[in-house]
Image 1 (cartoon, rainbow, N blue to C red):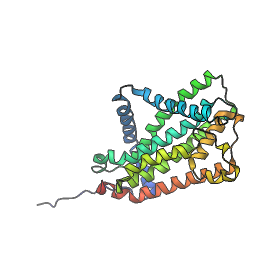
Image 2 (cartoon, rainbow, N blue to C red; image 1 turned 90 degrees about the vertical axis):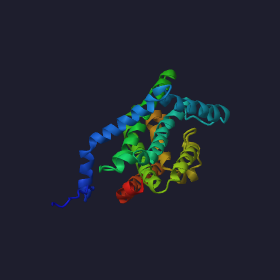
Image 3 (cartoon, rainbow, N blue to C red; image 1 turned 45 degrees about the horizontal axis):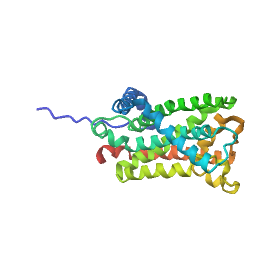
Image 4 (cartoon, rainbow, N blue to C red; image 1 turned 180 degrees about the horizontal axis):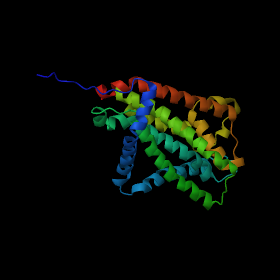
Length: 275
């Protein structure tokens, strides 16, 4: 009789092997992202238009409340453009948090059966939210055409700020994805974080109205720097960037990315057992 052999599949032991595995399993990444995109829009009544309606309605509400009723300054640009230039990165960030936090739970059957770098799952969730971001960008183009607003050369720097928004979404998303596996209460906390964050971030108003003595402290919210960067790039010379606060937000984003990857990798081996 021959003894039965047991095959154990485990992740690469070194960081180099792990990142090589991510490239090796890139087709799975494409599959997960494409599957989630199809599921999101295929089973909805209005389909892809939903990615346009949500930010558009929010922009209208903020424009009426902050622009028409509160009459807050618009930095010399049409208030809808001021709001939507912030709505784009915020919507991307908030959608990423919601999708990332549930991504591992949603794919629990896959995670518990085969090995692949689990980092692929929350990353694909962020990519799906990025598709919404690109679709919503059409509204901004429409607003610019409606108001005959022509951006300056600063618009060429927008990809840099998009990368920062992507990093902020990944960093916070990795933390929430990991914590939601171990503590299922986080599925109730995430909507509160998103709702609360909307009000403490300069989406409906310009951060330039914040008193100077509080600007640096206000920038502890990493989305302040991300939103200010988007407005600086889109609105041109009409908008000034508070550099100390932006650098602080940039540092906090980097901190979340580094610690998010560290904590995710630390808990990754236990996902299949806990889920």
